[in-house]
Length: 207
Image (cartoon, rainbow, N blue to C red; front, side, top):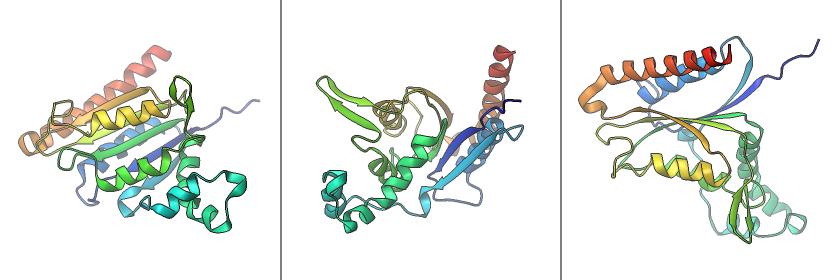
């Protein structure tokens, strides 16, 4: 009997809050929907606990050919390599991000800087950069207090879509629990229903 490979999910949390985090609440629900039936393996990456920033030593190591790197350079890139490996091996990427001051949290930007690696997640060609992680699915859970997701002052959602596309991930679904200062629990409940409806629709189309 052939065993069906488990769905490999990478969950990236960026909310600085833990208790009463609406972002994490919705991301929990999304993960639960994707991992129902115990047919998945979930890797949790909580960037809010801290991600290394790119510095001169990191840049020098990254631009040194792998076969020429010193032990210190290999060590300097080890954290980035681990984050890239998580991304490469995932079938589905879930990013839960609040919108802070119209953009993504600094910790999530630091994660992006660590995983956007030439020759690992994208490559340069005569026609420009090409993403290397095609065939993956991404979900975003975006929350905000006042910024409308998709508006001209939302510099977070479009940025994350661009980054995913840059590394080859073009299939992106966004669940937006925005303007919570105005809509609060009503908006959260609506997005929970959107998540349920999304997966019910997928199940129906697969039947």
